[in-house]
Length: 484
Image 1 (cartoon, rainbow, N blue to C red):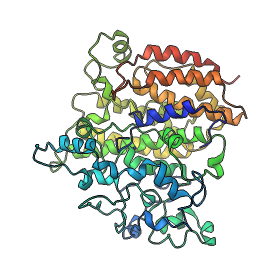
Image 2 (image 1 turned 120 degrees about the horizontal axis):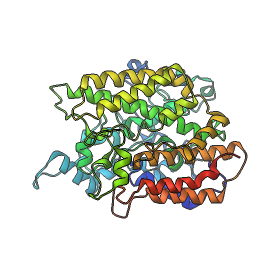
Image 3 (image 1 turned 45 degrees about the vertical axis):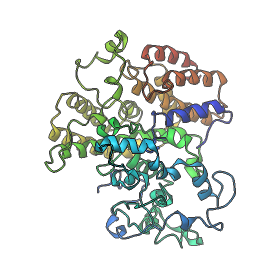
Image 4 (image 1 turned 90 degrees about the vertical axis):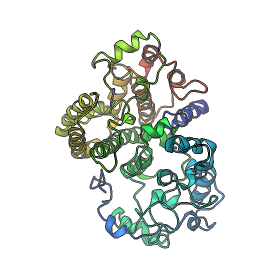
């Protein structure tokens, strides 16, 4: 990802801290309908039937010194496996299941007694994200269960790039570059260079699906809340690749943010639809409403007389109602304003209807499922506009609006304020890059001030001391972000 040339180490490290500490919590306590199939630039996923029997070969099949196990610098060609194995937490996703925290989570989740030993390293629920697509496993097949010790690859090469049975011996040949993304996907390789496809892959675990779900029960057992924000993940991930083509342009931070907002909203709506259907299924007997859909900190906060918070949050909803959609949908209407289309207005209206419906003590699951489905359809119709490059004018319009014309509802809680910060950072980076300017040290200092307000206290996994009014005052100091 293109970063401003003089971005300080403190800036990188603090943003990385936010990603690890719960802002964008890794799924390992540290990170069959395709929702976007058929979108421009994304290879179709409708050929899943012909790929169903493709097997994964494991990371060892990539780890030859003649292939990806070189000794070069991070992200250097030929050193992709080395970077993944030594720096990327995905490589340790399976091993953390042997930690005491993982055992505690599973013990709490399954309500085991003292005599029963928890084995998260064998639990299918855990392995679906912590060790998907292992050697010998077919695409879409059941997760392999480790019987003893360790040895699974974690989130390895094929978890993202696809089962390598048919492309491993072909992807380095000269004619491979001539193949289209669709042709490569027909052989099992996923189009990770495409930002939409890449974001969708990340969302499968970091947001969840009907088969890969972190619900309120699992969070209550001790699993981190899943707060995924695509551009922040990309910025802090020790990438084993170099961005090329349009991904190497100066607007990449802003484009990855915009794509992530739309893809994440789509994935979250699809998960909501699945949860609503499960609520009506007598076989699953899942709790409804699913509290993981809501703002955790609306309930989990100190019992203090916080008049400012109460006034700002309850201004448009009744006390006791549930605050839904505070993470994945907060800024989506702002993107729609910059990329208007007939479907954009429908998205905003559908989200308002969903918020009203989900705020009820018992939302009608049939109505929720239908409305979530309709909103996904609106997103699909809008996608052609939404995924187009922002352009300097739109980018700077968003940046100006986020740092100036903020609505109280957007910055009324920690979720909204954090999303606002995570938007301002990549928009600022892209704006400076497109104008050929280095970062302004004063601006970086102001951004550091915003970060410090969002940071959780030592030993806490919640923003116990967060005050939206203080955040807004600090945000006022970012007036200098507006293009002159």
